[in-house]
Amino acid sequence: MADLNILDFYKDTAKILLQLHRSFPRKAEVYVEDLIGADHVDEFGLHSKRHESCFGAMLWLSDEGYLRYQSTIRQEAIDQAVLTAKAIVLLGTINLKLPNTNFSNRDSKDTIKNDIPSFETKEHFAMIEHIRTALKSQSSDQITIIMRDFLG
Image (cartoon, rainbow, N blue to C red; front, top):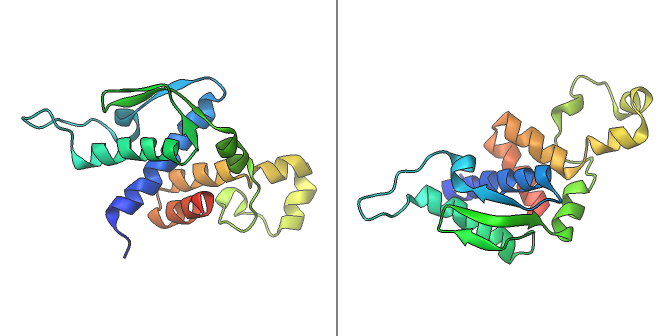
């Protein structure tokens, strides 16, 4: 069984990438609260471990070259964040091997090709679409598979 912190990490990184992809190429703030919900600090003003982990995922994505940001807003958010060229290319990569439920009612890839123009068909298999589908499914297994492939 996978560690819960790793499952949360995959879900957080998927949400961060998706949010920044929606605003690309504009720079945006990414708030932890928007990704995982409200957090209540303790009597010492410290955030929960879950909040710290999500914030850490943002910093990790930056350290690994998937995003850039100008500054942090305390431990609440990253400011002026944008995806890097590396992330944009990876998110646009077509992967026909990953599970994707967009065409689950189709008989085969040949049927898809006959119904939809080739470019549009391929776009449904872009990594960003796999991430979007996995998050909608709320399946930890599917999110893990997609994010391991993306980060791999």
